[in-house]
Length: 96
Image (tube, rainbow, N blue to C red):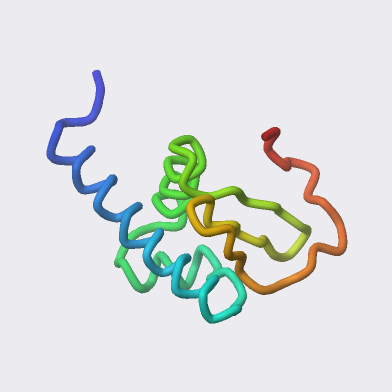
């Protein structure tokens, strides 16, 4: 059985808020916030943050390049990116 409409709506709202923070970080040339920082800010678990990133990627709002210890997020509508360089690609990098 799937999640209720209220739970799905809340998840989308949280993803939109995370997207807003990612846009701000990219505009300021700041590093992408860590999952733990985002989870603390929104009072949720890191799995919820991971799901929000997956939602944003699946809907073409962001592209994420993942490294061993960091990630660089590109905002698809503007081309702006969060700060950082990837030294090594993470072994679980998602296909484009």
